[in-house]
Amino acid sequence: MSEARTQAGQIALVALFVTALTTAQLTASKLLSFGLPVELPVTGANIILPGAALAYALTFFASDCYSELYGRRAAQVMVNVGFVMNFVLLALVWSTILAPAANPDAASQYRAVLAPGTNIVLGSLLAYVVSQNWDVLVFHRIRDATGPSMLWLRNVASTATSQAIDTVLFVAVAFYLAPQVLGFGEPLPVPVILSLIVGQYLLKLLIALVDTPFVYAVVAFFGGSKIDERENAWAAD
Image 1: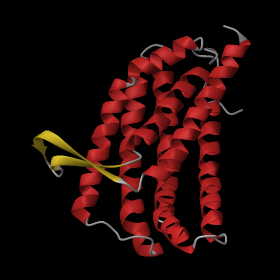
Image 2 (image 1 turned 90 degrees about the vertical axis):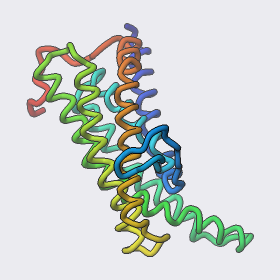
Image 3 (image 1 turned 180 degrees about the vertical axis):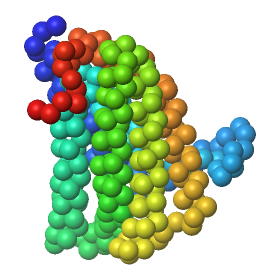
């Protein structure tokens, strides 16, 4: 495997991770509703999802690929860089909102659309720092126990558990707590909050199962794991 392909893999996965993360912050405030052929507890015959569900799920796909290819420490660096990028996004959005506007009416609409995104970013920040680090931790704990085999197990287990943590924290803060504290938008009713949690998690769990072959494909394309088998992934640097 050439050094160029290895570098391309690192850049591509970091780019996918940060792009999906920032896209999620800008699309989460739109709620999506999908009909189901059967009724489920809490959600009924419809599931309600934040618009960012797919984009945010891609961040876990990217981090699992990156973890397998380059190791726990490299993955945690990527996760922490993404965390800082949330603040960059928030600063850029609010600097634009507060800047003098040539068209006050358009500026008012712009603020109405993007200001509630602050709730999304704050909810995402808390959920992100907990769930992404949990994802990396569980992924490598399972890898330590099973060795380089059973990538499917660590991909599904790490993503399924971290997505559960992420979904509960994100929805509760972004759509219920932050609107009450900050005054941007209205907090959603508790039944809608519960429906959002269930609906979003079901989609994320489905993606965790479906994306496993793609994780294998990405890891194989970029030459397999670069983790030294003799290295203890949990040893101090």
